[in-house]
Length: 509
Image 1 (cartoon, helix red, strand yellow):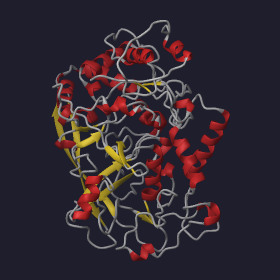
Image 2 (cartoon, rainbow, N blue to C red):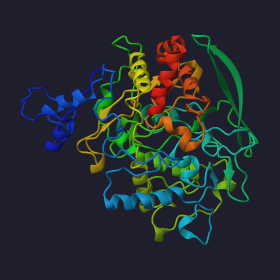
Image 3 (cartoon, rainbow, N blue to C red):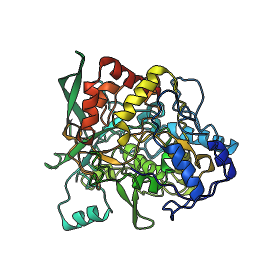
Image 4 (spheres, one colour):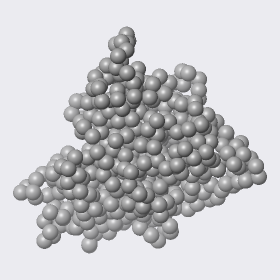
């Protein structure tokens, strides 16, 4: 799969890559508009897939370029700001951090700047879902609140208007008529929560080469204690755990053309990989753009992701989404009769523009931790297996961000997210049977792998995949199917030592 880059890089970029500016390059017109032809070739060189696994590549330990955090590994490793932030940027990050952790309360309240919660909600703060800015997990028992995991809800489009809305991208899904777009298992005082997610698991043992085996737990989902009547008989349920927050601003600054160059929906090159872009409507331009965020890549930007999280998870309106009652529906009149917290003197919405902007800035500048042990022989062996096994067909190792990024600290950075941000068919085992936009039930965005080896250190667990069904990295790999079937089967066929090296590499990310 070719990678394209396009126009204008200053002298220090060439110094960064250690390349001469003296050569003259003749090139065809470029689809990417932020690099010169000369610099295009240099960037293509630095982003080429390596075939040398005897040593680490240049800058490989700096997963996110200059913003990479070099601080000691602790439970706070996902909560540091980009290392190259200005003094003002550091101030705004810390303000955003306080708002990210802010506990919202129901209206009316004496703390006028903090009310507006719900009335139905999944968490009282952003941090409650994104624990330590990291990965959520399923509840340990069905008696526990899910908090960092919830159920998406939708029904098939039925009317011509609904079908038109889906086809044009005005809507990505049709909410369940009574319970809305997601199940809320908490509510303000005096109002019943919508219900409780119930999970049951079945174990299946998979034999591996070398006399080893792995047990996979297959989850089933239902809803109990429904407070507002029956759900639509055609309701589609899809579980989601909160994703890690690190490196989001850099992912947003990957040039769209670099992602489009990886799209191959018909598998024209015959490699078995047929990634496609999640195309999401930009309401300001009326054009569809690549979605990058969320398990189905349903959001174009960190801003839109934040707006939807405020509305759906906490029940807060913003200037972009005047949903003062969160996800309440017309079939929940008691919910819609509750007071809301929007106050004109503080700005439009319960989370007005200043609040939203600071939370978005914080979310964009959570630093990716530096890689560990990049020259360890076991890590290098695992890296070789990861690359030659075909894993990088979806988990693309590296990109260079836009030269003309909106925030200078995120501009022209060599980053190693190990993702193409595209949708891939992951097989029947991982399907949720729930389409979103142009993503089918079997298709999921390739999740970035940077920081994955610190999950246990930061979040105290090793639950992976969209619903946390995998209890460790090996289980997560063996759950892969669809386009990843061959890569998965190769791991099954590895020797125990090879599998151990592969996991060691992933733990170094």
